[in-house]
Image (cartoon, rainbow, N blue to C red; front, side, top):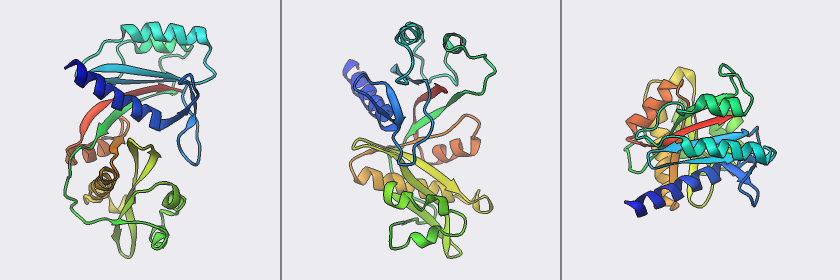
Amino acid sequence: MARRAEEYLALMRKRIATLYRCNDRGRILALNYFAGGAVPRFHLMRTALGNIARYRHDVPDDLVARLERICECEPVVDPPTRVPALCAEYLNALGILPANDERWSGPAYMIERDAPPLVAPIAINKKNAHLLRGKLEEWLPDVQHGQPLMAVIEDGRAVSLCASVRISNAVHCAGVETLPEYRRRGYAVSAVAGWARAVRALGAIPFYSTSWDNVASQAVASRLGASLAGVDFHVG
C-alpha cells in the first residue's frame, strides 16, 4: 500500500509539474502553456493519499514556511472535500478575505479507460485546421501546440473539441469547448474520449479538470468513467 501511495503521489506531482513551469526550487514561474497566462501564488492539490502544495516564485520564504505548516495539518480524506478543511487559514496567511474571488477550487479527473465515443471525432491537424473556422478560430494556434486535438464535426465544421493544453511526457491535460447550440448531444464526451485515447497511445496519462461550478463538465467526466484524482485549490 505504501508503494502504491508513493507511485500515485509521484504521478500527481507529475501532473502539477505539467501545469506549470517551475524553477530549480520547485517554485511556479509560469503556466506551461504556449500563450502564457496568470499563475497562482499558492496551489494545493488534495488527493485521497496525500496533499501536494506549490508556491509562486515571488512568495516570500517566511510565508511559504507558514503555509507549509498549515499544509502539514491539512487532513487527508477520501474523497477530498470541495475546499480544504483549513481553507480559512490559507486565506488568512495570504492576506485574503474569505469572500475574495481570487480563490478557485475544482475536481481533477484521470481518464484511465476507453469510453467509446457516441460520435466519432476526427484528429485536427494542419491539413484540416480550416474546420475550426466559424466559431472556434481561437483554437487554431493549438493545432500546432496542443496535440492531440480531436473534434466532432457537424454541418461541415468543428462544433466540439478537446486538445492538450498542458503537455509533458507523462501527462496531458485537456482543454475542451463545445459550441452552445451543439451542447447536450454527447459531443463533448465524444471529443474528450477520442482525445484521451490518443493521449494514452502516446504513453501519457490524460487528465481532465474543471470547476465545482461547472456541473455540465463534471457530467462529462462521469460519462467517461473518469476517476477523481484529486481536488485543486489555488489562490491568485
